[in-house]
Length: 193
Image 1 (tube, one colour):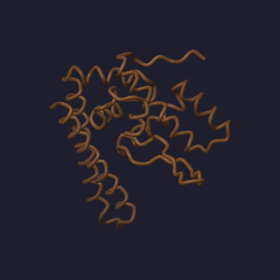
Image 2 (cartoon, one colour; image 1 turned 90 degrees about the vertical axis):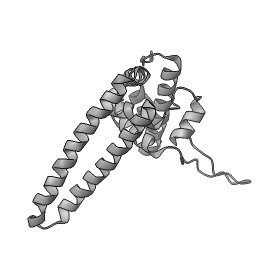
Image 3 (tube, rainbow, N blue to C red; image 1 turned 120 degrees about the vertical axis):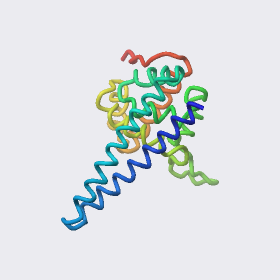
Image 4 (cartoon, rainbow, N blue to C red; image 1 turned 30 degrees about the horizontal axis):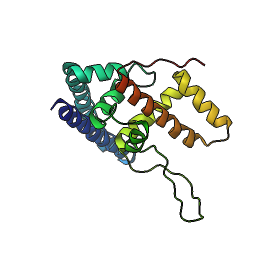
């Protein structure tokens, strides 16, 4: 029941964030006379988002299992409370699947496009887009502040990989590490290298 409550709060936050983005985009093309109206709506949405953030934090903190999961997830540099709450709500299977299954469920597993003698490119597809989006943002932070992910990202770039491909590989590395952390019930530990 608590997982559903957290998921509902996460979905509502996503809806309000989309509305706020729409209003901000609208503000840029509206005449000056209408901008105060849009500013009031944006201010109201910001207030609602702040209330929702408190509700999400409270829902996670009051449930022992969710609170423990958040503590484990946020022990990894690059994963904050918002991403942790999103993963708890949108990806409850985290910690119970193997590395290939969790990568496919998140949508960062490369699938082939082979047919007969044709060897097509490997591409990611499917999975849970909202979890992948949250992990994408955390990967952007992790390639700067997480020493393991930073080394991995730079090694891929030096090998000639495109930046987006390297970033997707980092997301896969992050999600498999988070899965192992929850499975083994151990906080993040930097690798020795």
